[in-house]
View 1: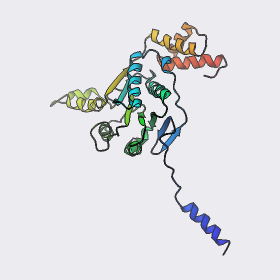
View 2: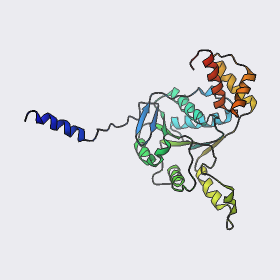
View 3: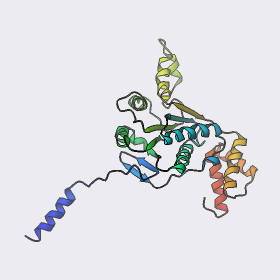
View 4: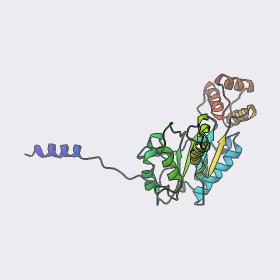
Length: 271
């Protein structure tokens, strides 16, 4: 009998559900939410002054994040436009800058795209916390025919029973200003050609700030490269930088950073 008891106890322990630990929403600078929370030890972002070619966008976003961190009225934000122009990097950098004054005032919570349906659970967890949160959904887009997703997001932003709490603001990045797909056929409604378009734009209208990002000029691209190279003490050649962008078919902050990474690799540096 004495041998049976330990085996029975071990079997019951294996059958029991794992114990859950409550998330510490105060201790970390950032979190990832995929239905459950995971703390992130550090936010990976460049300093704000290294983000070139988006000065107006940088001022708007960083000022709004600073207001949120201070407990003042702040907007939900939609950052839309050209790929690689620093939309998500700017959000991370703005939160990092706000944390320099007091790390405990604000945290970034990045939501996995497949976890959108669990946002009400996240809002419930964040409500009442003695801290502000910027909930970040990167590269958001909805498929054709998906009406439930956009309607839920509208409700969370404004007016729904599951709307985000007062200490939380949403920040969304998207390649499209309207977030949802739009087609020329939407203009062909013989009864009211604006109805379909207005319904889709209504989602973007829920954001207090809608900030556009556009492909950068050659001068802006070179300025971005120059800023990164100066910060990391890297020598660079303007013609090579332009050739790099031509081979990739784009001029953007992302392409500029990729070129700087190439230079650092050649120099044997880690950046």
